Image 1 (cartoon, rainbow, N blue to C red):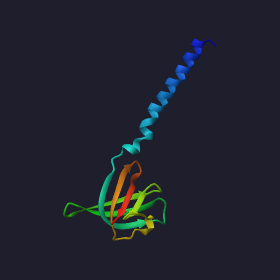
Image 2: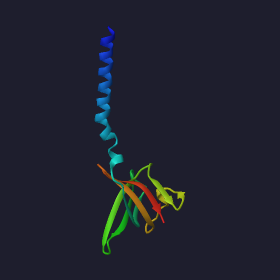
Image 3: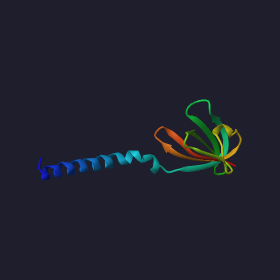
Image 4: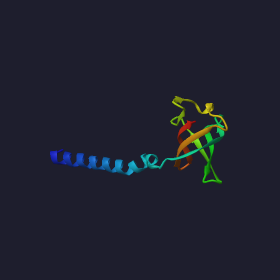
Length: 116
């Protein structure tokens, strides 16, 4: 094999690698581009018995309309009460929280929950 042939093969492998990375990049980072939303409201339900865990929060939208948000709670969800990290099972129905979530293909996913 000549140097020119080796160079052409190396260049082809390099370009193919870049093409694969370029095509895969949107799907890998799709979740990071999702806009996070937040609601403040009252915990209506917490389910730690099933997988995935779920929290449901009732928030007021305007002065009369209610907004019910149910989101899955994964291991990467940060749950805080004040400055202390707590588990989902520490949250009780009726407690005031701020829920930050993102929309995914399979529903809403909680990113953080802050109890007040």
